[in-house]
Amino acid sequence: MKDRGTPALERRLGDWARARMSRHTAAFVMFVLKQGWAALFGGLFLIAIVLTRAIWQPDWALSRYDALFLFAVLTQAVFLWLRLEDWAEAKVIALFHLTGTAMEVFKLAQGSWDYPESGIFEIAGVPLFSGFMYASVGSYMARVIRIFHMRFAPYPPFWATVLLAVAIYANFFTHHWLPDMRLGLFAATVLLFGRTRIWFFPGDHAYWMPLPLAAFLSAFFLWIAENVGTLTRTWVYAGQGHFDLVTWGKFGSWYLLLYVSFTTVTLVMRGALHRTPLDAGQISSLAPKTLS
Image (cartoon, rainbow, N blue to C red; front, side, top):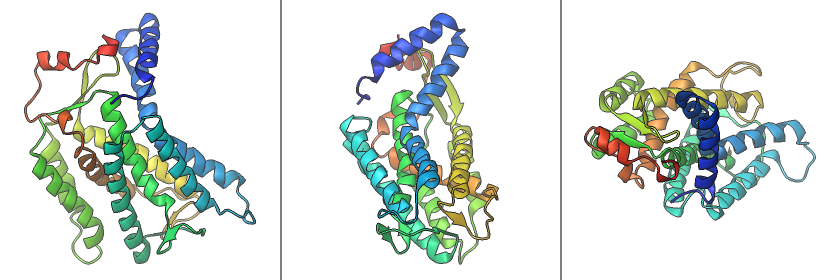
């Protein structure tokens, strides 16, 4: 499945960049552009958060939270209509949406964070747009794997990745009563995925990055997004002042939660996972045909 109309545009942009830049500079430019395209859902949602904070009035008939929810639903529908996501991807993204919403309900009840505004579309005080924040991460995962023609090798046994994802998710709940296993889970991600390389194609040449490093960098950008959310008072953490940055502990939380999202997405992208390392011939054969 390919985004409608994007391969030709990708080729034109790649040709333009390679004609004017060195190979590695052109690859970096294409990497940034493709990353932005992969993160389109999340980017649009962050823009909506900032814009609604700037313009929304308390006496308007529609609350800001409800507007964000309706915007997210419409955006998801447009993504499916334009084939920016397919239905199989949408189903697993919806699964992460549901697990994220369940965690939101629990954490809100525990007083971990709060939503200072109100709306109609909510469950147990949790506005329904919040689930789309998790869905945007799943959307990014599915799209970035496809857009960069990613392959993961050598990939650990799938059952082991599922067990780790379940343990990470469970710890977000159980640490309220039992010892927090976060440090052990950090170590487990490195032990399980430390040898796994993400092979990806910004253009017609392959590059690779260790999977834990990719998760670390992604978590940093999610930490920035968290700060956008709190600075606009869309949600606030317990004890957080208006201009306080989100604690670095949330950076670690997102690092772990990314493994839950990634494992969920790989339920429908198993073809990208390889149990053994890839040799040069295999890597060459994976190059996107539209760019070769």
